[in-house]
Image (cartoon, rainbow, N blue to C red; front, top):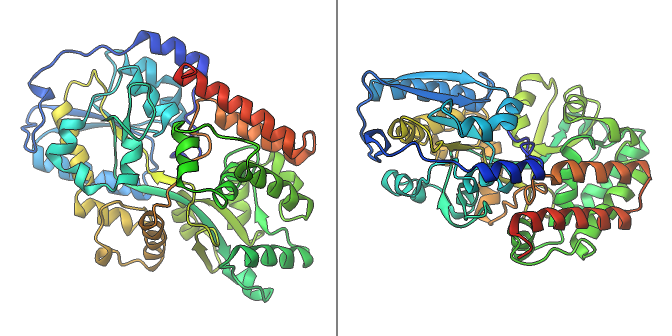
Length: 442
């Protein structure tokens, strides 16, 4: 599974500090480190790791990319499908050893790719980005997660990864349930509240939710974004300004989550629900609404046996979202030139269009080449979001530990053990402690 929106790749801060002391030493330059759009791969093998399901849009596209790569270069690909957790928990150790692959899929953000970049474990891709033109193909907002400074903070500095798909969070609506209950699919924030109230009045809990994992955190962040602007997002994500957790953005989000639970829009059982539980509740037709990531799209196409549609959060101009995960090249990779070529092939129109027609969100696809109706809807929503500079990243990205801390805080909110104000105070302190660890308090 991919990042699932919230950075499940968060690594404990203490571990990060220990590993950062190890650093990543270069294996030394060689002819295979050169950057060129043409490479001779005869007699050579590219070692590639990813954690996509073979039937996912990315899995389908990358399988085709491997075939195209082998045909064009003469090289072979030694492909290994790894579990997300396997890569997450061993990345720093493996990439600092002789067992490092030539290229791998890795989670984006300060706590993950940024951390490895700051440890010297990832290859600087500035020259490759320019030579292959990736810096022209990717919009500024999509480049944010590709670039990191010397402290591993995203948004500036050098290229250390390349995304070739996007992801974002949106509403999934069970259109049949809306129609059956004579309720309008909302297009404004007021209509969203009215729809939830109408479903509750009919004895139906409107929102499929999970507080044990990421979905509720995404909703919390979206509510904050509805009161925020780009400068607030920059401050929250890249520490340009200090984030006030008692300010109007976060206090509104936390209070609204509690209000919606009190009104019965969110089940109290959500405290123990995982993302899978919430998603399956929607798939089974029990919940009229589910707010989560585009990575669910293909599964709903395959498994939901009712009419459904999607939409960005009503009335909002920003939503959680970003580029997808990154292709990264370890510092100790033996075949960097092959890795660069493979990345470029995944950015080609053929592969991008294939991804788009299988429910993915390609970053450089030709819209006219996307023939599947639901895929067109998915991509259109993403293009609208990027067109209005609306990708606001994810709530846990600022620090390695904030994913677990946010989930715990929202569980305490739902079970009533802490008030909204107390949750905000605790989250604010945990957030700031994590930022201070990264920046040295600067």
